Image 1 (tube, one colour):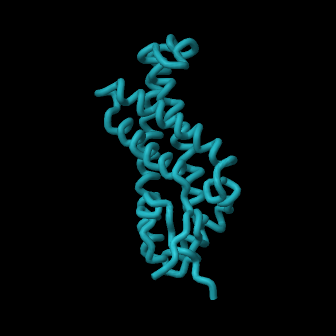
Image 2 (spheres, helix red, strand yellow):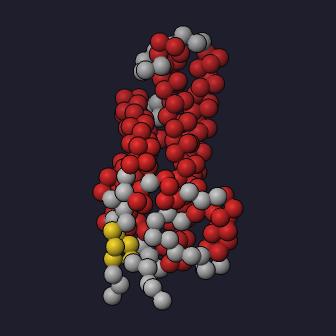
Image 3 (tube, helix red, strand yellow):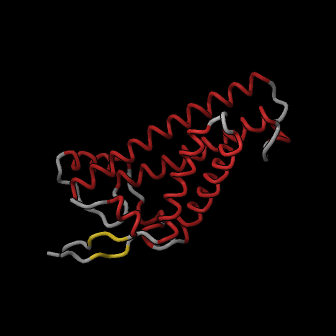
Length: 190
């Protein structure tokens, strides 16, 4: 039986699952259920603000400095993973790290354009004083951009899930369980 070590702290795990839930609530409610859509969007923004702070102040594996890798290192990792020979990382692997930064940026852009749509179309939200009377042309631009970014973020989520499945297979480790419990198998020392 392998030794388990604590990798993901409770706040990081809560952030992960709350963010995922809020994104899907926002994505699937769209304009049909505006109030839950807006509150889910605010929750996404709050989670992103938390993650940015936690990325500098949290425990080791939550810190951005723990998983700063170059794109070339991420590509090399993905090639090795396809051939089932990728190095195992206790924290984020290089491909997962790049995905985290891309998803943070995409979720932030999606949320900010959502606030712009809310201000322009509903004359509500924190941007309403500046964008509440921009006119139909800008309303359409904000809405199209917001929808594109939401769909792009969903695409990233599917890539993320594929990456989790691939790494779980390569390293024979249930990464979903690790994000629930916080524990991963300790590295074997030769």
